[in-house]
Image (tube, rainbow, N blue to C red; front, side):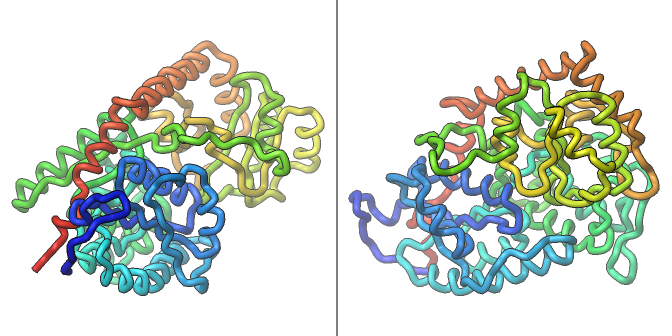
Length: 453
């Protein structure tokens, strides 16, 4: 790739300009929002950002006040690329392949420009990031929006799904199901049934992700050291060992989270002509710290019998709740939703909810993470809810009362508040996450460093 001399509108030499090509994983909104906020932080630090997204998403994004004064542009996919309904890893892989195919015209256009990107920042789920960085001859920085626990699992996946690990690969390419307990250094012990069944059917995907991050120029994780220090230390240790064995430079870690907690330059004002979501209206009327938020996320699927048991427990416990239930809605006891709505005790949301606003500045957590890592949750039943095991309503009721009524539960809530204060410090000016973003910008090369003969 060759570049010619020149200067931008501010008089800066093009050769020193840093330019990040940012590619989100478009099948999940939380992934898009996370990497978009990361891109805004890079742009606020003087990096030119080219953000790849769906054509239908561009008009809304362009109206974002946070873009004012930033060198930030959108590169839309062809309109023929639309979001599918992701029901399995098969659907996921199909969409990932399709998005890579549709990305090719964008890459070809970027190659011929003077201000071509000098680095690639992409969602880890875009498993073709390695190929893109090689094609453009630029360093790559995969982004984990889910924190260090998941990053550590991905880092270990090539060993887990191998003859050395617990999940042996069979001749047909699938992995043998493993019901026992296994250990990943840095994480608490897990069992095979806790993992998505699709990972056993197509283990090549997590294996590929693990190999991808092993050779990345840097790893960006939506976390802070204060939150996940054991996992972060183990990730670093593994990278140090890999670098020593291969002779290549050690992969750098950039802990930039929680990315959603960085303050906006222009806080959004409520739109008078836009109704406030029902879930937020309902929360506005509830006492402070009195509501159980129940959600399995976009990948979670509720077992109908489990839905029924949980509903029975919620009614018996008498605790306020907001329950996101996009599927198996029909499994609720007859008249349950109406009774809860009329009593004001609970609200069931069957569609999308503004989770970030609901949780304020707290990050979503799975059950194991809350219980075993942060020590701010209580376990109900087995860690895996799939298969024949069923958590009975009495166990749920016990957990609800423990968290919201008992002294020990209230102590856990206090721990959450302490964590929140630590994370606020991390994203404040001079905080660890703020400094990590500055370090990331320093690592991104300028145009002059990307010139090759």
